[in-house]
Length: 195
Image (cartoon, rainbow, N blue to C red; front, side):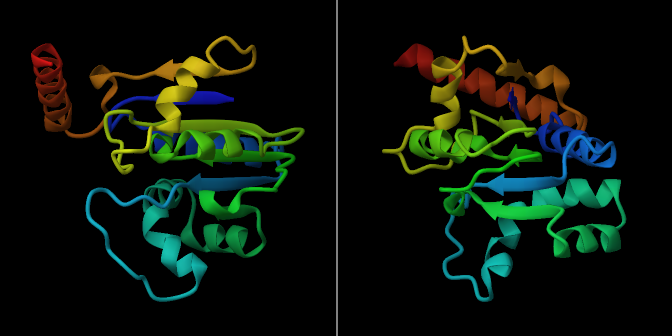
């Protein structure tokens, strides 16, 4: 299990998808399972029409975007139809055992502690797991605590679990994104000093 924690624009999702597709191509795993919590960033879009996949589609856009850059859309569609690439809302993971799979939990900062524990106990034999998130962009209700933040303390000494921390120096988007992240970090430090 590898946790990748860092700010926006550091390629967390892109790299996880690239590694998963490489593992699939090299027959290290039989399938890829993409998981995200269905938490909206600040504003609620309310009821979404359609079947389950249509309802969750907006939440999985970052993962689709990364995959479309790495493979033709027809191939991605075929893999999804055959279950080789599966979209799995976090809410429906309980009770599953995922063997020989590459599982990506994206936006993990928006999991609760209970959801994180439930997710971490799903993978089976022959599986690989990457969990990524940005602990500065938690969209959970105020009373909820991020499972990603808590898990860094709970699991830090377990052999076979790695934590990789990225910083604003690792941003691969527009130069201004790096400056924006630094400005917010400075503001957060000022606010902490006032408290």
